[in-house]
Amino acid sequence: MLKFYARFEINDETGDALTDHDMTLLHYSKITSLQRAAFAKFPDLRMFSLANVASVDTRESLKEHFGALDAQSLKNIACYLNLVPETLEPPFEWHRLDEEFLRELLISRHERRVSQLEALNEMPLYPTESIIWDENIWVL
Image (cartoon, rainbow, N blue to C red; front, side, top):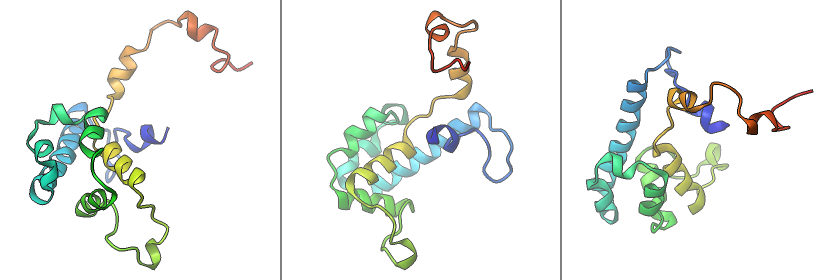
């Protein structure tokens, strides 16, 4: 549910609705900034940084590329992209910087999103049998 609202197709500054093209441009800018950072600062990710966006923006592909990195490398990448602070000073002592969190942070921020319009178009027009008999959907 958090992913749905965090990636809602609305401009954060103006509140205007974003088109599918605008959302794609935002996604490409995030992925290419990650690739530029990987190319400039992290030689272990050279293959990732030289690949095209469509081949590296899936969750599985990102897990494959970031899976072999240790916690310090993940923290360096996240710090370089300004996703986490470099040092934990008093106002930031609550930050979680373990390997699992950092990997999930990088993957969830850069994975390809599902278009809300495409998801809506894939839904059936009429209720299916599974929807009719699902007790979690119907409220009595």
